[in-house]
Image 1 (tube, rainbow, N blue to C red):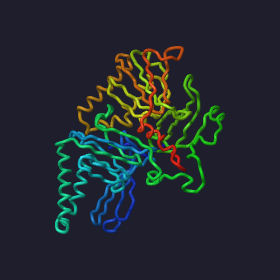
Image 2 (cartoon, helix red, strand yellow):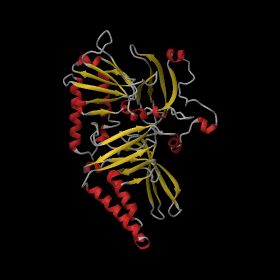
Image 3 (cartoon, helix red, strand yellow):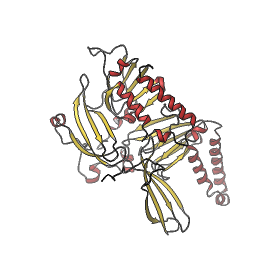
Image 4 (tube, rainbow, N blue to C red):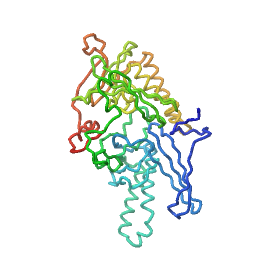
Amino acid sequence: MGTNKPLFRNLNADDPDPEATEIESLCMNCHATGLTRLLLTKIPFYKEVVLMSFTCDQCGYQNNEIQSGAPISDKGVKFVLTVKSERDLNRQIVKSDYASIKLVEIDFEIPSESQKGEVTTVEGIINRIIMGLEQDQPVRRIQHPDIATQIDEVINKLQKLKTLEEPFTLILEDMSGNSFIENPNAPKNDERCKVHYFTRNKEQDHEVGIFTKEEITGEKESAILHPISGYTLEELEGEVLKFPTNCSNCGSPCTTNMKMTNIPHFKEVVIMATTCDICGHRTNEVKSGSGIEEKGLRIEVDVNSKDDFSRDILKSETCSLKIPQLQLEVGPHALGGRFTTVEGLLKAIQEQLCDPQNSYLYMFGDSQEPKSKRKFEEFIKKFDEILEGELPVTIVLDDPAGNSYIQSMRDDDQTDEGLRITHYQRSFEQNDDLGLNDMKTENYETA
């Protein structure tokens, strides 16, 4: 007892037992027996991954590969990165098997599933393309000189991209949602990289291995069942329900407690709490119990004194958060859904940024620039000033689903002077993020 460890652990040089698994496997180069090493770990600000390294002592062949250790994301992801500086060239990139990459200015594209997943940089991607194109050039110059000349022109264009004579655009699109581009300005907003989440269509779901029950068994089903299916409304409202799940931090089996309740002057919500006995990780999450509203919702609240900290606030899982005075932008997936106070929300952001188990130690290891570390420390000090009531800020909540809420300081439920609420019509992209553009697809429903 007491020897249980998380499935996915943070990399640590002092770890006496990193739990790398060694497996004898066939060498695809000489067909002798080689050795594959597997390591389950986590990438900060991203998710769990499996690192694989193969070595053959007979022929010297080596191969390194990365695969996602987390479930396939509910949505695909698209990154549009404008590369303007050497710092952008050095951005780390996690690229899954399903990711496609396009270099817009030279009209060059790497299709999905044409390369194995890897951890690399923007410059590393360009170098790998160049190496692949140069590989058979000596033979082409003899057998197909015209094609070799065209490929040389593409290689020259790729080399020029690395010199940054002009900015260029890199688009990474991954239907599995398991790719990632580093933000060197974290926790501030990344002005050069735009991220868009999209709902997969039926063909893309099949490509990543997701099928409905009807497609597998032939049995018709109107919707994919969730753990709370089968309970009556009275049961949901009257007691705490439990169902098995996996820890979001280490992947170990654990139990989630769920309760449906009603927030006064708002709507019904589902509160879920999970505690992992293996790694000690705890999560509290709130989800709307009444679907997507007709319009999106934008809430701006001024935090000028400690009195403003007591406002109740519901941030749904589809709601993004901004603090303009800090140039801070938190995406909808970073904090999840939660019902708390303004003070509780600010503390949750600060704790996530400073958590030594997840971000701080990774973000500022030996390889981190001193300038970036100093800026981050100054940023955290500003958070302390906000929580002490010394630095007035404005919190902006933007929820396309319209399922967020903040308490008014007036008794008649009208907005007070420090609170501004706006309803807006969602864009096509926002509807796509919420899966509304695919609702009319025949015989197919997304979860």
